[in-house]
Length: 102
Image: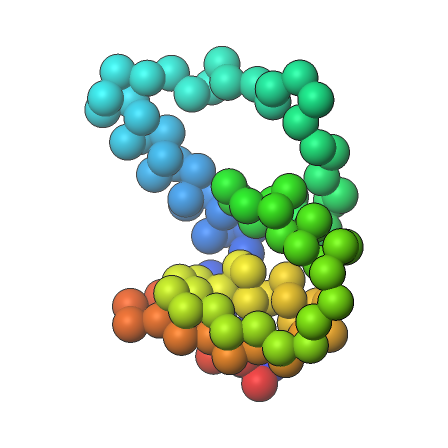
């Protein structure tokens, strides 16, 4: 499998900083946001997937499928999760952040 230019942890940190900066520019303080009551618990393996961790966990836990077409894959966080779960992934993105997977 090809390596992405930045490790997942570093990409996640950069994305979180960007989200916080964007929120502050609109006058929001997202540091006080907590998980809503009854929110699904997410296993550690999915916590690095920002904004979609619970959805990815549910998709992989509750549905049987072998192949994935990830259009607009960006840096490849979702594609990496599917690969870790044995799925055959085709990932496409027009941007420069797109990763190559083997």
